[in-house]
Length: 344
Image (cartoon, rainbow, N blue to C red; front, side, top):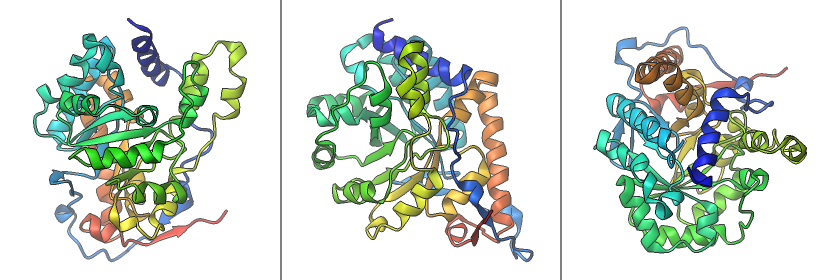
């Protein structure tokens, strides 16, 4: 493997084998639904489906951008695509930059469309590439590689800062995103990678013309933790200091949902989404959809596609349970469900 492939492989291994969660929480535990003793709905009628860019999802779930670019990633992406096709939910691939310079790993991305022709798929490039004036022919290659329905730009300043070989030049990200929006025909999604997007950043992104913001807040997998564990022991001090850095997911949702231009975008909740109740709370806090990576990767690792299906089905029962007990027949009604902030 080349060095990039080794790094990508190590990322997956660390997530599966080490404890890399944030120490602080997502903040969802600070909110509780107000129980409705008279829901006046039939559980069988509950419909958690949602539409995104003409794609209908059976549930407000996207299997978040994970991987690609090393041998085992082909199996992972094929299995995720098979699962997403079966359950009719969306999927993102990992950063595709490497595949532009190394044809040996193209198939680890292309396999998604070979397995699942009709699912919603997000392509993926990093903010550092946007800063560096990514050539449009490269953008088109990335989009065509997975026949992407949308292109995600991931903001990973924290990860790049801790990563031994990281790119720390983020000057011009907003301008680059604005140019990208104007240059391509598919929607542009901007997502953090676990440190959260707050109100100020969201306002700038909306002004730049993005179609979707994924807050990807703190409380789930810490990329500072992952990169810290890749360091030699003597180089880990700074990473440990920033292990817990970021805006908790629930707080990020509240902030972005309060931005005056919020209605111009779709809002995705990710970062520590671990069950259907987290999904339900996300919707009630203003999200349109949710995304998750680690729990699905672990379910796949433990029991293949069957593990993915079992995990998803449990999430759906939990989501529908929260909808039933708040009298919410669909997601539109769930967005209006009452949440109480818990005081210690």
